[in-house]
Image 1 (cartoon, rainbow, N blue to C red):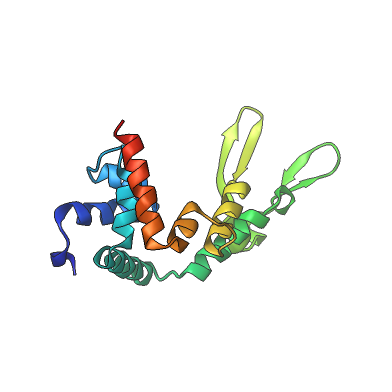
Image 2: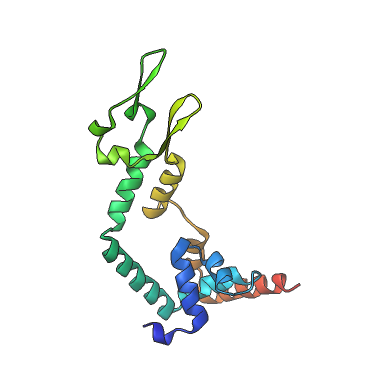
Length: 169
């Protein structure tokens, strides 16, 4: 399908797949910073662009042998992790649990273990960020894109015109 897309559209798709941020992808693809938000939104509405994004996402999912459910389950492990999964506290000291006895799901929440000034340090992945990603994946947020998508075309066109006029001042 890539043959039907122009060079800038192809670059936008490549950039969009990095972080799923249409505005940033549009800027990295060479669109003006002033119009990147509008351009990104309009590009995502183009059938050829959206179909290519879906195709490449499916290709990536097959290649990685991952699906959305697996990713969300991994994020749930991160969001649900607590420090007592990894250390015991007897009131005066901390002792690491035997990591060989911990499940793969529990260990997925560990970002790093390193030697610090006062001994071993364990850092877990950010629970808030994981929770945020879960909510996005399950539709727990209403985004500006959700609202824009529900606008009648004539109202959306009016808003885009108004925005462009303000940006060009």
